[in-house]
Image (cartoon, rainbow, N blue to C red; front, top):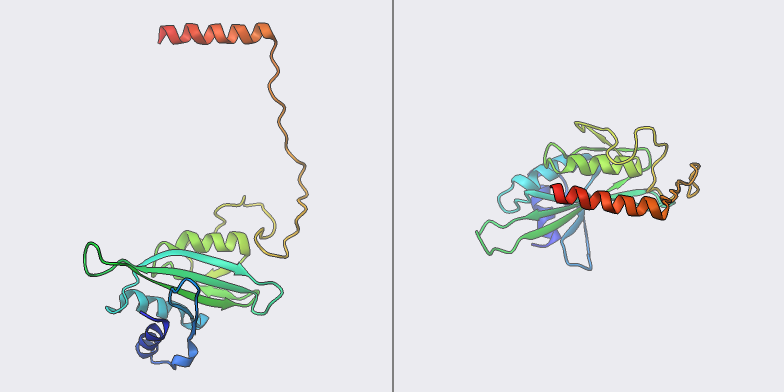
Length: 190
């Protein structure tokens, strides 16, 4: 299925102009289209629920920072339709892209695909992109007291924490031999 066919189904289902969506050529030949941020959730529901489409799986959500370009961010939603023809049917794929200005929020699609829950949290954690209606908008990978968003292109490279190094354990030859003998004795009793 081509991006133009997907756009036609979405425009018809949402009763909007097809020109509000934009088809994009993709080198990997996955149908790719830009979706307006305002109709993201409704578009995703149609992609999941429309019988001709059935994109039931959100594989990944990939944020990209194009700083200093405006709009600064793009979110790529990678979708899969596992196939409705049974075993051996080739799955179909699609990619939705959403342009996001710095400081804008994006509607959460965690209510459409539960897999979006952690992916949206990761996008917030690393890029600072907030999602309206997200069920658990906490950091997921970075410590709670972390300042800033480390995947942004303008994030400072120099970290203000001292480098942590660990010295190897130094034992004498006698201590080493005693440890080996103790381990052998323990192995015999087990």
